[in-house]
Length: 199
Image 1 (cartoon, helix red, strand yellow):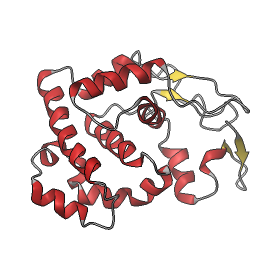
Image 2 (tube, helix red, strand yellow):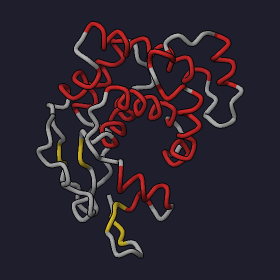
Image 3 (cartoon, helix red, strand yellow):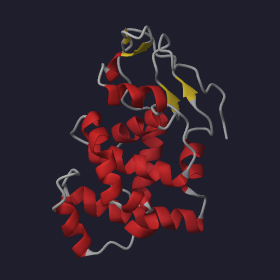
Image 4 (cartoon, helix red, strand yellow):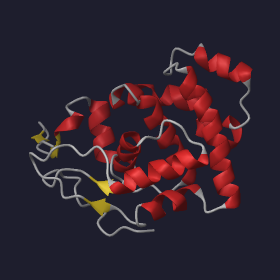
């Protein structure tokens, strides 16, 4: 991992570059612990759509995704039928991958099952991670992390329950994004903001 001092004098993880959208995402969202069930569902689905693409591609289309998928409300998505799937496949504002669209509908149904029967989506995921953010103390020059034992365990649990596009690498990227792990480099101004922040 690398860090970079930007023109505003702030040191950030180098991956966010200088694109204002990416910088704002890095500064305001990436690595912030998220405990809201619906928000976690949205992020996991978007990380699945990212597979094979750069995250900035999804980030630029995120508002379109939210519009197309009814604000990522699982109760609505779970009832999508073939006509809605076809409409999504004609929407140029999103990533038009049929397998991922169909998987999103199934994932919404699984999400609702977890919410109804327990333990709840947020609790399920955070418990696998130990209930609190893990600070990996990433230093300049460390190789990028792409998975972890917790990511492997979370991937297995999600697949067992019926989710798709949740391999360990996708799940680890999700964990980084929602603050389950702090992978900001130690010199980044965002590192360590949520140390010990359990729910």
